[in-house]
Length: 488
Image 1 (cartoon, rainbow, N blue to C red):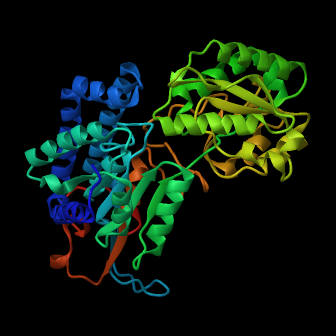
Image 2: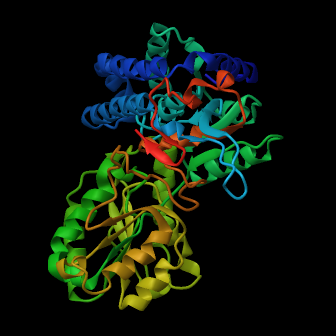
Image 3: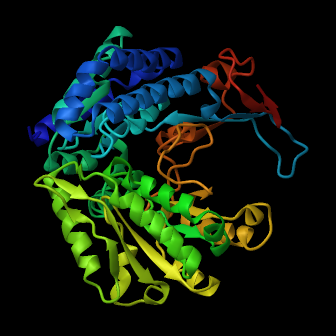
């Protein structure tokens, strides 16, 4: 199913030609809602196809499809509201220093967006996922590079989106689909592609990021690459509820067979009796978890090899050994190491890299200084979590200081929770410092639409020549800032 360079070119050109059909906000919001309705109408068939290719199970996949439909409708609402256009109008003011001319600013779509599907979310981060929904909402056609782990599902979902487009007078080429590694390279290089969204590995994402920057005309590349998602458990929190934290950690790190980008992969837990109780709870819960199937044999091989390499490091223990289960499955587990082994550069640096699958590394620290030393060595992350005692959460102790230490490390900071589960909400931020992502934007939540827009200001343009969004009488009823006043 490898697409040729000519097929990639045809898909991009068809998407580029469909731009004008997305200009009307009412049309594209109706398109997004129709896409959600179409996916729901085909739910049973789509879930069956997804399970056949991913083995993620009908329950998980049905929930993910519902989330995908919710996301499409959420962006339709955002499009209808219009605040994402960020309209600002300033009338001339000769009394200002320097004088202000007539200026009118809003945001316009970038153009064709290349979307690179993820393996672990065949609906929510794939053909009809957040990158596609937000790009279409912004008025940008998309060409999706399908993930090789679910090619048949990708074709089925693309056909649903195309039918929804056609029902609203939009050319079906508004959603293109290509398959194959080389097609992905051709796509990022195509001169009509104006931006890209990616979810995947550090290696693959960095190669595409570099290719996007090396083009004769560089383009924005919004990539989600990799994350450890550190967790800090204070000694007081462990003393207060060690068993609950241990069980919660086990549930989070094994959820989806550890194949979530926000899986807690590095946990700082105190030494001493409270920490021992926590590890006993974690051991019991992980030992009771069932072996699971990873998305493909390559991931399974990488997981087994990665765990083995980490477990062989000196003074690394494996209370519950993760690794190969049956012929196709893997078992969950965790490793432990003393904090002083990670406080400075050395042989244990491999433990600071993500290992995709149901494993986490528990770092035992003796005092706050050791914990801070480990945190100071961490790369950027999607999430960072702290578990505090009741008193610490009420403002006593180092709770605020720990939050301040975690904030530079991640795009989402959690208190007394677990990072798995990324709510689709207006205030959500799913991104973080490199290598978590290659930009400061989010791929989940309403502000994800901002990735596919650019601002443009008109100066001194006659009212008759202005786009409707920038006219004084506001014929579209848009929220805007008019001569310094916020109008809704």
